Image (cartoon, rainbow, N blue to C red; front, side):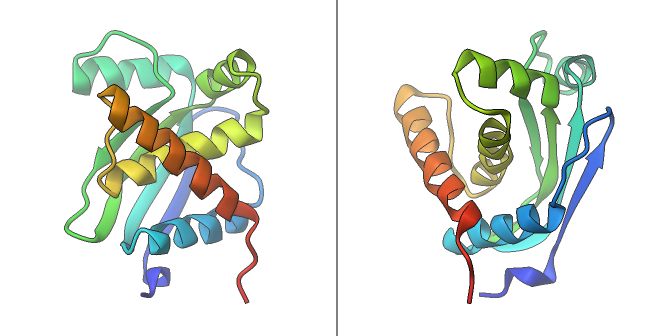
Length: 146
């Protein structure tokens, strides 16, 4: 499976700057391949709480803060979509769960991809599986490919 034909974009609507984007892109390609999916075009948009709250209110009719909203345009095994991440919320969640920011950010980044792969998180059972998958995929971040 060749996931390299697609595109992963990183944009920022706040002052957050994701460093080492190539490391993240390579990791996400491994995650996508490990789920036997293919990469179309996925855009990550980093923003603040208010930006994401506005999207939540306008498009999802939810009046609450969240760490991630993903708009899935995938077709079959070809993953496409926009993933909005509040870096403010990630920072707060990291502190709340006694996790470092980078690990919590990876968890949220991969969470969106896992949704595109078909994983849900509404029920307790689905959320537990999603959490296990997130942890499994985070371990792929430092795997060297030869």
